[in-house]
Length: 238
Image (cartoon, rainbow, N blue to C red):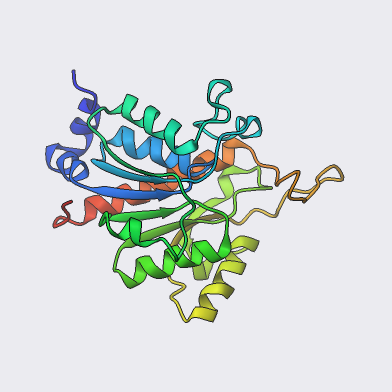
């Protein structure tokens, strides 16, 4: 029985073939992006463009799918490629081990992806990705802030201009407004009030606290919306 048998009997041959002819760029392979890649690969997408400049650290293990004791100090993009090909050896992978922003976004555009997932934290780079995706008529969906949140039931799919209780979304809206760019961007966010306690330290050294029960669902939700988008377009091919 082949690896996508159960997907085939659920979605049908035509839709599975459509996924196999589709491509998606996932920018950021951390707590959110790693789970997004995993779901897309296991659902049968034909091509993934994976992007991350960072290496795996021990502190990533609590929430990042590619982070294991055996992968510490390895490039996230290398570990992701190996795991995704282990899921589906026929998956076409284009790997970029660099930070993606407006200056090098052309390497994403050159691959002509059908969809783009923004799973990074930098506001300006998120704005670059969104703005250039929209300008090139490519479906883009963005992850908002998953740190300092603990309740997975508060996670929602919406548009950037309709999010609440998310500082990252608020800052991203400001940046896009300055550029005159659209705010009607699909995104996944949580409207939960940020968790705080006297032991929390918001410093670059300590980072922001997060747990996989929230970040993983962000990634899965993003992947599901990409799959819906790819299957909704009957004329899509890569």
